[in-house]
Length: 496
Ligand SMILES: Cc1cc2nc3c(=O)[nH]c(=O)nc-3n(C[C@H](O)[C@H](O)[C@H](O)COP(=O)(O)OP(=O)(O)OC[C@H]3O[C@@H](n4cnc5c(N)ncnc54)[C@H](O)[C@@H]3O)c2cc1C
Image (tube, rainbow, N blue to C red):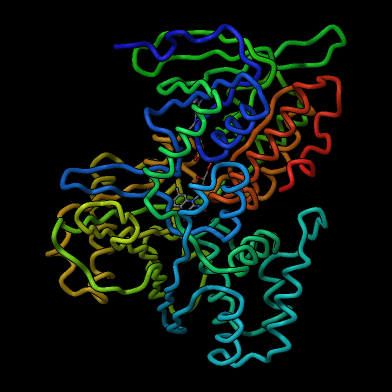
């Protein structure tokens, strides 16, 4: 078996830990800036959470291709390729079915304005004022208000409106009524700008195109390599700086050290600081802040593959369903939640496939604590339960779905933890405070950067790619002048 370290160089300008969207974007950008880049991924496949898997019967399942905002078109065109950007297309049929309402929408501002006025009987002034307010929201305002308070200001006594607004965003970033309003506001506004989009061709096609682009730009990509430690030393002036990484092959256990001037970690921020950096690399107050960062909730998904040759009717692209009488952030993440979203993949998701294929992926939001300590037997039983509940819910739309599906399996927070190593199996990074720790990393250790889902705003495909761009610009600025302000003005110069 070849070693993942064959022909590895002794030194790189930049080492990127993890090949999620944040890591790959940072690696690609740094290579385009002319840097020698090593991209390390502990899994055998690239993409992190933005990846796919195949199963017998010709099934290909996408893990996180449910929908992202229109901004992905610009970000991928600017920082990846036109070919990737041109494949992004809109999902036009988003449905909400729950005891409060039955809504079908293109999920953009014009259509939501119509629905809020016609179906929810709000005044045009209120709706306009709400959207205008969201447009003004800014991370740097440090506004302490919660989403609950924001909703009470604009839609007092209207839990149905609050449900319509927050439920889809809770699926997109795990945010709740009690999180800072900006965690709802920015993501909701991003979607409202033009609707919900996905990548046509499937995640497999996208990752292949990204891999080809990184290779063309000279990124040295190594899979099956776990980064165990980021090596930090003090320079003559007493300033801590990154000097290298300690690596282990995940298949044969071989150990290697590689020198580098900068590290961009795409791993979870808690792992990055507390395990890979470690106690000696940081000041005590910073370590305390990192320890206090709360990770976000996770997803539990059921993947259902429709047998080759079978078809299912069009029931919508994204179907948000719930049996909960009223919206509750707690019900949404309950172990026995009745709130689930169906993402339906019709043949036009992968138009290149010879025979038309259909798949349905069910998502529920879950908490790590409910799954982490189940015995093997209980774990299997609860996976079977969520599969059965998914089928039962889907039968309301497609009564003969069971006879058409020839593969069904469930992934849980434990699955996320196993494949991408996120603390708490989180699908949506950290709560708000994670962003501050992530951004402050290079102030602690020269050349040490983090790009990945943090603080909700930098979460999801779009946020993660944009964060990878910002951080790669900062790392490049450090490589040019290690004495410069570690935070610099690279975010502005990255144009994000
Ligand atoms: C079920 C689910 C559905 C989702 N749906 C959507 C959606 O529809 N739209 C959307 O925009 N977002 C969605 N998301 C969120 C989105 O997928 C993530 O926000 C985004 O992909 C995260 O990218 P990232 O680069 O931050 O991290 P990740 O994708 O987690 O990548 C981190 C990478 O680092 C690697 N790594 C970690 N530690 C090490 C180490 N020590 N050494 C080497 N490698 C390491 C991991 O293996 C992984 O490949 C979803 C997430 C989940 C789980």
